[in-house]
Length: 121
Image 1: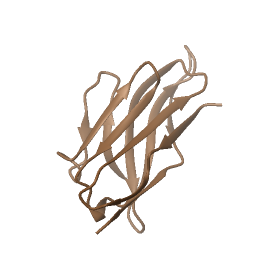
Image 2: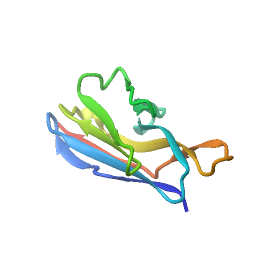
Image 3: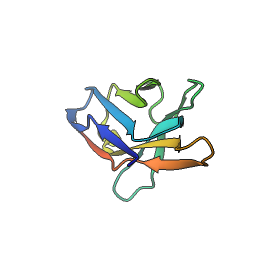
Image 4: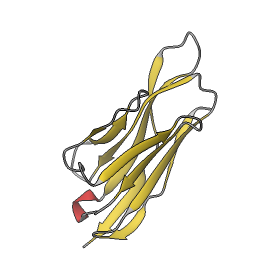
């Protein structure tokens, strides 16, 4: 069974740091772009950061300069280093990946179940 499993969420004080991890597991032929999105109560899900297979990066405006996305191609893992956290960063963070399960399969969009990040003031 193919799945994305996130870890690393929790409670942190404002100004602190957290590191999220997400591993794509199962029988996967190719992993394309991987990224992180977040959703706060009453708000739409928004882009945090994305890293395509070429290693380029793109960040949402709210996190530029504070968060860093990276990936380990060998283990199909994506990371999100979050520094200088603010209370407004409080949200459920979702891992996202474009996965191709077989040589002749279409690329499909997968989501993790989410991990809660709470930043206290």
